[in-house]
Image (cartoon, rainbow, N blue to C red; front, side, top):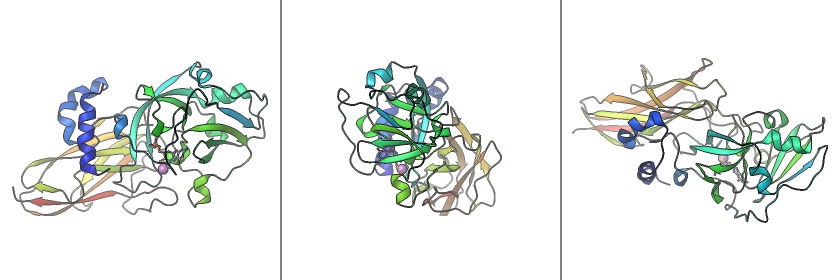
Length: 330
Ligand SMILES: Nc1nc2c(c(=O)[nH]1)N[C@H]1C(S)=C(S)[C@@H](COP(=O)(O)O)O[C@H]1N2
Ligand SMILES: [Mo]
C-alpha cells in the first residue's frame, strides 16, 4: 500500500477506535503523525506470507501436537484452546525483510494462551530441543524449546478484540517475543517437538534465530516530501527493540546529517514488546534547500543505533532510517 493511502486509512480507522486513556488527549492532533495510533487498526496491519492467506473452517480445524512428547493425545479443537487460561497483551510484529521505511511493522492487542500450557498437556520429552510449527499454507518454522517455554510466548486466537482475521492466521498463530515475523507462524495445524529442524526461510538463506534488531522508522515526512520554510513541522515515527535491549529509552532526530541530535518526545508506549511512537517539533529553516532527516534510538541497556547499517538479508537491517525531503518557499 502506498504511504499516502495508508495515512488516510489510519486516520479513518483511528476515529472509530478505542484508544488507551493516555492517548485520547493526543488523538485529535495526531492525524498528521505516522503511526497515528499506538494500536494499528486491523485493516492497516501489514500482511505477509509465502502464498495466499489460507481460509480455514474452524469446525474442521484441529491442532495436532506430535513428535518428542510423553503423552500422545487427540488433536485439540479450537474450543479446547479458547477454554484455557488466556492472556491479553500488546505485541508489535516486524518483518525481517523490512528495510527501513517499508512499513512492514505494525502493533496490535492479541489474546491467546501460553504455548507452554499447551505443550505441558502433551508432556515434552527431555531430548526435545526445538518446537516446529507446520502451517496450512506449507510454511514451517522452528524455535528453540527455551523460547517456546517463555511466559510471553503465545498461541493467539484474537487480534484487536476480534477472532484472528484469515490474513493474520485464523484460527491460531504464534506470537514469539523478541523475534521477527518469520518466527510468528500463522494458520498452524501441527506443533512438533524435535531435536532439530531447518525452517522454510533458513533453507533460503535467512537467519535461523531472527532476533529483532533495535530500529527506528521515520513515518513523517515521506521520502521526497516538500516542507514549507519557516513553519513548524512534526517529524514522527516508531522505534522498536522487541525487548531485546530492555526497551526503548530515547529517540533522537537529526536534520544536519548527524552532526547534532534533538531528543524526540515518546508520546505513546506500552510493553517493551510493543513499539514506541515518537514525535519532534521542527522549526523549519527559512531557506529553501534539500534536507535529510535521520532518526535513531537508544535502548535501556545503553545500545544506540549506529549510522553504519547492514542490509536486511540475512539477519534483519540495522543503521539509521533516513528520509530525503525538501524545504520549499512558503
Ligand atoms: N503460515 C505462515 N506464517 C507466516 C508466514 C508465512 O508465509 N506463512 N510469514 C511470516 C512472515 S515473514 C511475517 S513478516 C509475518 C507477518 O504476519 P502478518 O501477516 O500477520 O503481519 O507472518 C509470518 N508467518
Ligand atoms: Mo516477514
